[in-house]
Length: 345
Ligand SMILES: [Zn+2]
Image 1: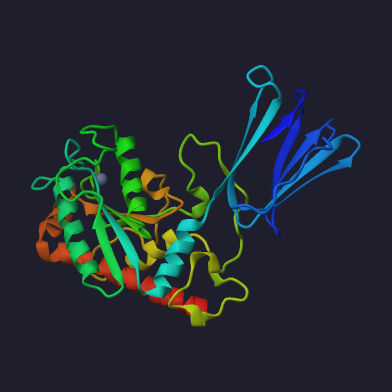
Image 2: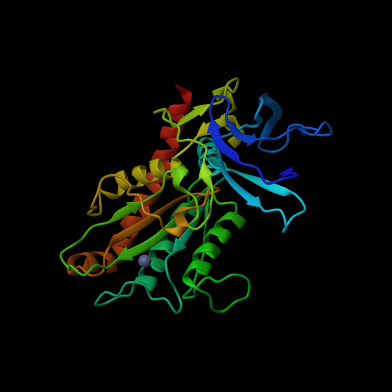
């Protein structure tokens, strides 16, 4: 928080190498009592200096690429003119997934069967989405639990609509946030939301994978911005001084990783296409609420179309539900081995 005795003009921008949020404060003098705080959380260093006659510059150096938000409070509602800079870690989910994937000891998967209870989702001629996706989710949980080094839990395990606390009813948005909350609460590294599509054109068919780049995981209506978008092609690497001998106990802070939701989605899709008709061979971006968690890498799978007769017939067959679940497990495993290869380079 910056307090100024009068209303001023200011400008905020970011720089990289090192990561910095810079706030230029015009027509200001720096109070001699001002003390800069020591290293704390995301903040590595804070510097303030009068860098020309008209302007003081505050530089916040961060240890990571962050989401930042700047708000002001006018004099009147506050004794001083106040500028509030809010910082939030952006790529935690990618780092946590990377570390857990190479450790192979505690990869936790939250499986989210879409809809439920009052919300049936898409309707086919023989099955409704909420029932179908629950069956696939339960199957997937069993398969994951039988794998070494992996466990799974469900965001709903019956025909209920997930709502916060003890509420029996809530809005769609509240339910989606609750699903993310349950994933976080269970310390999940991965959130897999399972759905089935419907479309006005019954000829449209096939499965679709959705995932978001980390820089787009900003909730709707929030004023956060991301510092900058990394341009490097290397999406995962070990931090300096970390050896790949520590692979059984790698910590998220020891890797630099981003956009792992997308990579995970692509690996699952690669496996799915062997047994399931897919619409596109890469993950698509869509601003679905469950994909926006910055803490948990997340993908949403539309297992194909209940509005298409052939897709529906495929989906209601238990053997095919099993194929989908198995493909997801293979996808997670091939993602993990690939990450290990990438980090060993
Ligand atoms: Zn759905």
